[in-house]
Image (cartoon, rainbow, N blue to C red; front, top):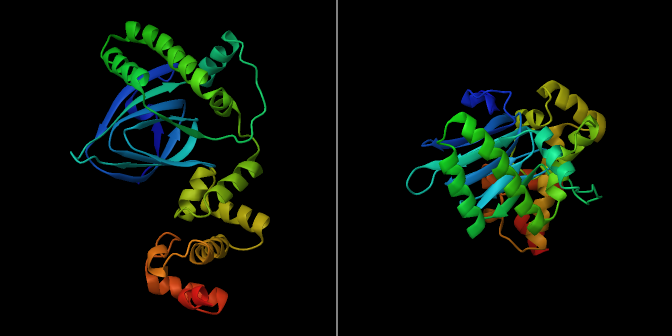
Length: 278
């Protein structure tokens, strides 16, 4: 599967600071590698969307929408019951976001967690807003571009009034610290079933560089480290949550129950069931 760059893939004019696309698909997509050249609203209208970023993973249905920071991510699209996936995508640059912050005299503040993607629930105002966007997307470019400037400001004002400004500053913060980004990506995805290739993509690294960085910071191979973390989580689910081994093996990244039992016994000296009954 090739890497897709958005909004370039839609044959858009890269000079535009705000762009809108009515995206529809009738085939499911699993963990597509995506490079977002601009920040993006994804107003999901049909289907299920799952995204993996460096420090955040989210799954939403059509009762929610996303705002995503520019950068690397993995994206899964699942079809609805009528075999369709649809999302209205609103792309906008960091420059226009910084102008909005300056224009509205929004002061930067310290916040506990910087995230690369945020989800919000639809309400009546947002549904009306999205319907307006659909109509605007059909207009001629000069008119469309002028209206999109106003609509972007409208949605940002509305969201900051309800949810605060944390998401604004998360979008504008640069991730220049390569080591920090690497560590966040690893720690945030230790229980997600991602391949080394997918993890390396989220870090914007080759697989060989990712392995080298990993062993430098964690003093063991990625495969061994992730296996240990998932087995430790399995131990937690068995003892604290009292879950059955046959229920959790896939949740902790094993294809079969037998392979999970074998790995668990290798680490703890007993089978998951024996360990749970002790």
